[in-house]
Image 1 (tube, helix red, strand yellow):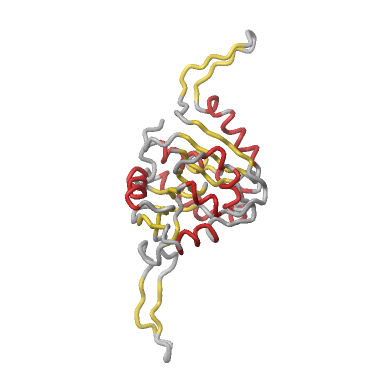
Image 2: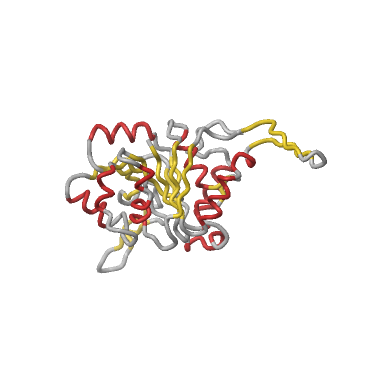
Length: 260
């Protein structure tokens, strides 16, 4: 099964770094967050990726073009013009990097890679979020329910505590500190999709989260896989620093792989 990763946005909310590189290439723990996402899929046996690029697509292409060199021990003998590869840590990945347009919306990017997906079910996620979801169970859930789309529903929680205020007097009747399980369920990405849904994508201007998913919901073809474990997107520098702090403490829930 192929994994489509949306990695073409401008990342304006994290412009401190995205002015230099696409958001999926911003590093946490010394590796691009895109790499972390791919490692999460790879540990469940999903090793064929389609990267939908747009903004600064050349940086993503160059990263994978040089991936083998980046992740190997190498001796350069300049006098003899020789290069010796001692150890390679490359993954068993097949990666197709597609420039899907600078201003193309999420739905349009998916439609542009239809020929690479083929007529089979595929995974889909965004290039800026990590979680500890069991992707094997997600796929089994999708097969069981036989819907056009399965999305992972998460509760991101509130950044702030809440106040219960009396409408008349203004008195605070109760104060609750922020909780991880506070708030409604939202789309956390990590979806499984049947190829028929691509037919409901109009073109480059189609936002996938609007017309296509709204159609799937109205036609009873959208089901949610509730994930109550760890999930975190990287929208801002605050999010990046939070993810970095988790990695530094050695408590990153999504990093379940053995990596040097």
